[in-house]
Length: 247
Image (cartoon, rainbow, N blue to C red; front, top):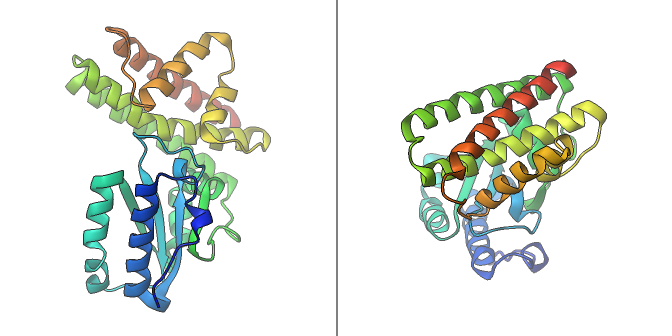
């Protein structure tokens, strides 16, 4: 029997993306059979807010797989990545607890923004401890700051490259803000809204608008990338300070 995704799950996505997801999940189901436990769409696509610059993110959970089974999904993944930025996290169900503890910020974001394309959501009973979330957000922010400084030394004299670096940093910056907001007062907001909530002062509004514009793939006025890059480093430091106060 040919597998068909429920069209309601992809109705608000571009037709090409819906086709890619249909083909990829069908190959997974045929290859893994009963070993396949869930296929989760997460991120902006799960919110129905997919942009041209957005990746299409999947989490595949299975009890196990052989290399031959993974071989069978190579071409669909390559095609999906080339056509729509398809990225896939392959996770064994036995690894779920360790993954959540190690990558609490990412999995908190996935838990908040996901659609089940196949199987049962592993997030229904998933508990992410406060300690793991706080520890991981501190690690994410530290790593993000370290990487951005290295990128700046390498490419700080190329404005378009700086814009790309800022765009790539936007996701973890927003996800960290969402985690911190939940830790601070229990509220759960989408990552973009969480960052805006934490930095609601008027002085930050132009910075957040510029970050959003770059994330959408727009170009800044000449000479503005350098200043925005410094502002992003400042936001990272401010988020780290919030994490320290929560601790």
